[in-house]
Image (cartoon, rainbow, N blue to C red; front, top):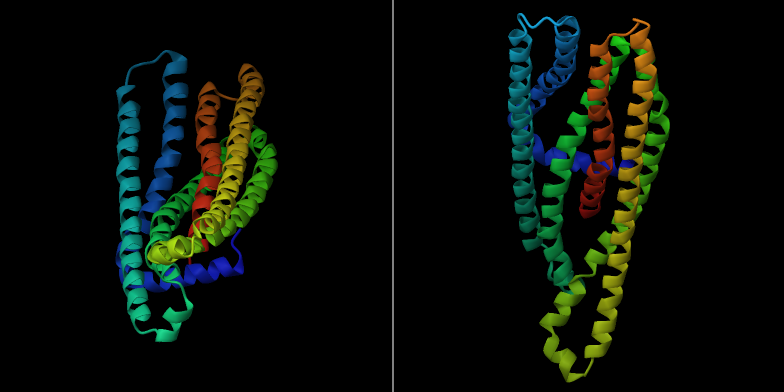
Length: 311
């Protein structure tokens, strides 16, 4: 889903992140533990239901419940450590990028400042870097973890019961297709919003030269031109919201339909004693953990595209 230009941007970012490899590796080391917690929880649910509740046996039930609570606490600690270290790496990286850019701007020839509006330079040093830090770093942190967790959960589901997992996999192709389509549209929209943000220098230049504008009675002309920039940005943002809403509602609907299909198919398997009740409940519980990350991929991808446009 990444284009060649996107990979080039990633290389630039990782180049500045090199001094903070240790912090980054601490975060990355949490990924296997996070995946293990995601897999252990549904497995423990199966053990509790099939091993105890289905047989009306509550003796020794406190032990698996203790394990469930321990897994939840461990998952919280691991996810917090993962997010904290990677975001810390990202913020230090952005700080270094800002220092390098300021140093480079100070060494630029005077001809650059004669031909380039100050607003563009300020945008690069302030809002663009903030976009990279807030959107790119945080979105990548969530995207990587959610992707690996989703793949691991699907593999576990295939191992436990491949027939029930096929119900989930059948609806995956249209979801993935729509996600890729929306991603491409979002990139086009973010290029438009980036183009509009680059023209914000126009307002700054006008404010710096407001006396000249008033002297030549050009207020209406300036207002009309700036309104055209605002309208372009608003139209792009409205389309971004539309695509995001379409995918969100579509995946929510697909999730509900898949749960209904899983209950319909799984209940028959339970009655035939070819599937346990614990497995069916664990699958339904896990289904949200599979589809919600896919639904969130769009907003994460939108944030990443916005940050790519800021490079």
